[in-house]
Image 1 (tube, rainbow, N blue to C red):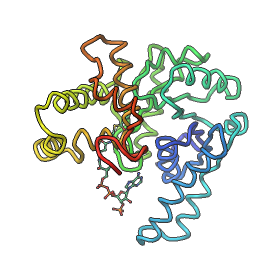
Image 2: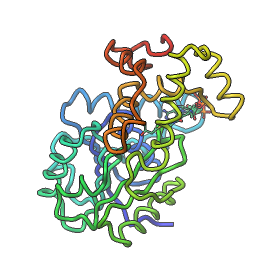
Image 3: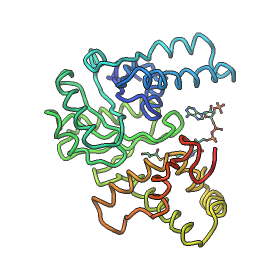
Image 4: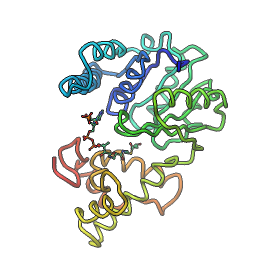
Length: 284
Ligand code: 3HC
């Protein structure tokens, strides 16, 4: 099986960007990974290299395989360099509508007309982001899940003007990457995060109303629903700030019944963001 995408630019080298870059490189696609500062770029590339080195230590890959894969990943600081000869951009920067639109305006200047723009946004309307470009027919949502290397799903989201050809190309790419695509229209949170938000937010309310303790809720969900993580473990893993951003967005778009639990707001205000900050619902 061949992919029509030989070289892809991934914008943003955080957890999602570097994870997506790894998935693409593993499938043999050249990846131009971009970030705004050298230190962020270094962190992203380092996280990929750490993972690959652990593959060698565990005997799951050999030196030669790792070297081939590393050569597929090309770090860049400038968009004009990173967008040369690419067929697709996957945007994975911070979940902020204004920053994403600014980025797409700039990408529009540098990219050839044929390049497809995909956003890994977890909730924001695709057609709204597409207004920053002149190619709404080639603009699509491509939502990966954390950690991208292990999670099989990609939500493919159609904006108002996304063409059938664009959707077909992205679905083929997902299959080429050995991921399972599902289609969604652009309602806030799409499929997974719309449901995930309600589920996580209710778990915070159970805890703050003293209905059950943290460990009991996590245990109940893991054993009662066969989830790999309970809601508090998962929230810490995703990052409470990210969860709150998703919840706020869904509430602003869909109404007060989606209002974030006050416990979540307080924890984010106190800097308790989960694993990445050293404490959240658990300490790390
Ligand atoms: N990248 C690449 N490989 C990884 C990895 C990563 N980040 N983390 C672990 N691995 C590898 C390990 O090296 C290990 O490899 P090996 O078996 O060959 O040695 C293998 O994966 C298994 O590692 P673990 O034993 O640590 O993994 P677990 O079996 O404990 O599973 C998990 C870890 C996949 C994270 C699992 O706990 C899980 O599925 N949790 C739920 C995750 C989830 O729900 N994600 C979605 C969040 S919502 C989202 O992303 C949407 C966004 O918009 C917010």
